[in-house]
Image 1 (cartoon, rainbow, N blue to C red):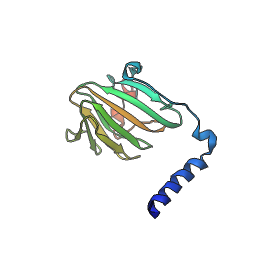
Image 2 (image 1 turned 135 degrees about the horizontal axis):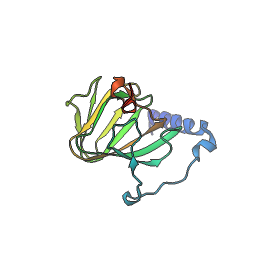
Image 3 (image 1 turned 45 degrees about the horizontal axis):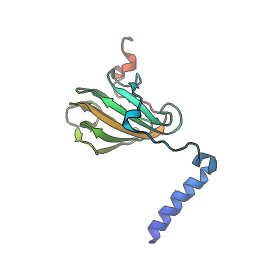
Length: 159
């Protein structure tokens, strides 16, 4: 091992140990096949039409979470940000993801196996042209902060 590898290993191990044994053993294994995923309507911070399945954790609580999201063809998520990093893996279809303050049909096409990291506080948008399934993971709580408050689906019908 070189000095850098030893230093990184020591840092990661030190961070894990500093969390304490309770933090390291807060949950058991999760073993789940696709057929066992329980899909529900996505939360109201997403435009209607998406389905979501919580795989692990509590996206509205604290700690690590993992979810899957099914997006229909023609789905659009206007420019927004999150208070924590968002990690996205495309499982099927194509997710178009772009950075900026306004949804434009200029996003990067991410195909199955594609990965994106949307850093905390950075404005980004997404859209689909075909049915697409993604997996998202990060640290909770999940929150959507829309660049244009009028784009927030939670405001639908409110003036």
